[in-house]
Image (tube, rainbow, N blue to C red; front, side):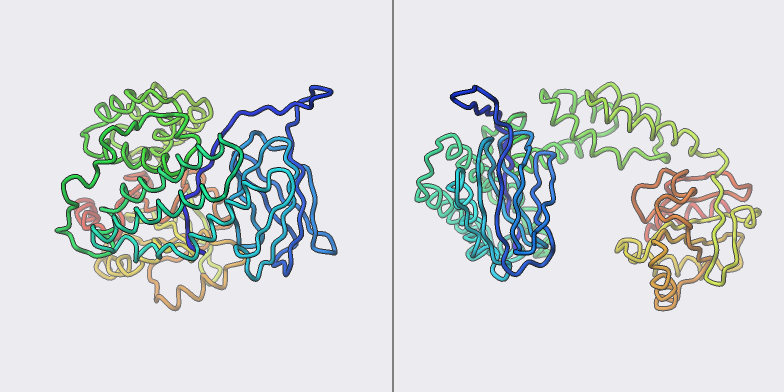
Length: 450
């Protein structure tokens, strides 16, 4: 199924019963699934998620205590579609998974908006081009097709005659942001797909953004396309700045606390124990963020990272190789130790293997140990054995005991792999986030230490 940008609108609407004036904060949801591929259906969105089991007749029914009116996702197996839920709705859906999008049909209170969304999804499935074909088009062809898609979606909305004017106006806005998101993404995607490094869009290509407001918190919360546009804008804006102080000064100029906090959260992956200004980085994030949960998380990271700076004793590892022999960091004292934390399911990890093999061969006979620690789950032990053989992996190959929860992984606060660590001959940290084997800088580092 092709990906389509769907917006997730947040609307605060309170419905009241006329007689008792009691607040209705739920949706009655039922349906039937023909040819189910699983034993349940799922509804999710707006920090809400529920799984509803099918009965013996492949039917389901439940009360959805949704946090707010807005857009959600209805899914069965690998198929899904956008769905709009309004407090007090009583919606029934029928679907055949053999032709999921073609057979989605809603009845009951709130059905008209959801039948429209099902048609919108199906229209995109049938008429929208594949991602690579769309963004590989030349500029004129892209603009023509993007405008056509925009027009078709507006026509579908108008012809659906939905009586809820608020919903219609929001859909118009969502469609417009989808259109702009395609424009915003075109240049980078076109360069990537065509490999034409000389390509530059013509003057005026971004004219629709001349008066664009990148600091609208309401739209940022409600429309996924607007969120994508804004995120890309600020990431590009910040990447052109030098130094932490300039970067954070720019972020602090953003009025929306939500946008500001989301940008800060994206920095969590560059906030590493190897950062040269770790303490200053931490102070700036604490000063700028208004998200208490983020502050707690980043403080916990910082307290771990303080123990992982250069010169501190390295956390210990002690794991078995394929023959069952346990090898520890202490066993390698007197050698530089270059550790690769990886897994068989990790694509970027596997791309580093040829480069790591080159290093291992190049530094044979030198006082350096190449250690690869797999954090595969125990059930994938045989995959680890097979991949070592298939890739002819060299060096010391070890299998961690508790995958992500292994003591060494936890001690180094590893949240993403591959992760490379460089430890000196005395067992002290040189870098808790060292250069990858594919980075030419790693040879300079080795040569300076050997």
